Structures are given as structure tokens and as C-alpha cells.
Image (cartoon, rainbow, N blue to C red):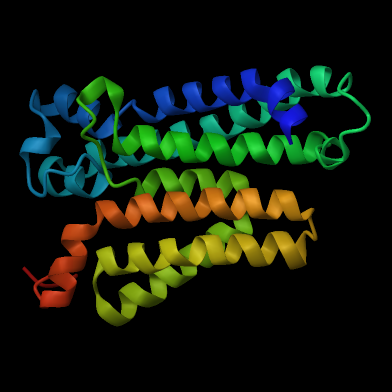
Length: 238
């Protein structure tokens, strides 16, 4: 592992930095400024996300925000994969053969590590954007975009859980929270039993997804309080 970090630190730093900066591009704030000249964080829930844009600005700004958040996370994941392959592989090939851990990191596994790291950092950038005073959105659309690229099967699990919970509870926030919890579980099960990947890769991917879920849940802390109190807004209720 020491040799891997020694030979891959540049790729890891570039992946994390670029993904965070891409995540920090808050389309909710930018698009609302273009349409109304105001800050989306001064409207409604104060959240810089597509849902608040829809409620306060309308369908077109919300659609553009939705697409922007999806695309930036997809691009981040793709770039993370490319960087880990292109920067790490040349140096790993010349690493000491006595390092058994290096055998686990073929191009496919390096790409996965880069992809999940980029996804995590992009979500961090979206929630805590350096360009906008570290006050961003809750990361739901960004997480969806990165999950679609990382593993569409995991995305299908998350979307299915979201739909079921929302249909039963009529609470979008509860659906987002429960769907988020399902993502690291689905990641572990699919990476272990469906893809049958190496243990080190499974642990890294699962841990990265668990961190993303934990961050998103913390951002939903106010919603959780309202759910417990029975005051959370529901679909169809004004």
C-alpha cells in the first residue's frame, strides 16, 4: 500500500482537486442569478438545489440546474477514471515487484478508485462550494449523476428505493435519505457478489459511497427533525 500511495499520490491529488472544483460549480446559484438576478439561497428552503429552483424560479431554470448537476458529477467520475489510469500506471509498472498489493491494482481497479474518489470530492464540492462561500446544495442530483456512471445497477437500486419510499410516505426528503442509505449496501453486495472484485477494491468503493451517504444525511438533518416531529412537507399538501 505504501508503494501504491507513493506512486499514485499525484493522480489521487489531481483527481480529488479537479472533482472538488467541478462540484463547486453551483448551477442552482448561477442559473438563478441569470434568470432573476438573485441568490437562490434567499428563496424558499435556502437550499442551492434543483428542487428549490423549481419551486421559486420555474421549470426551465430547474431543468437546467438538474442537467448541470448531473453532468458535472458524470464528468468528474470520468476524469477521475482517466487520471488514475494515465498518471498511476506508468509509475506502478516500475514499482518494486515485492509489493504484493500492486498486483491488485490493474487498470480496471485503478479506474474504479479514481472514479469513486472523484465522485466523493464532487459531492463535497457541491455541498461546500469554494466559489460560493461553502454554502451549496444537499447533493441529491450530484449523487445520482455519479452513481449512474459508477454503476447503473446501484443507481437503479437507489431510484427504486426512493420511488417506493416516496409513494408510501409522500416525503421526498425521506425517500432521498433512505435511498442514500441503500447505496453503500448495494455497492458492497454488487461489487462482492455480482462483479466478484478484489477485497481491497470492494472496501474502497463501499467506504467512499458510505462517506457520500453520511454527508448527504447530515445535510438533511433539518428534514430528519421535521420528519420525527411530523411536520415535514408532503407531496400534494400545500
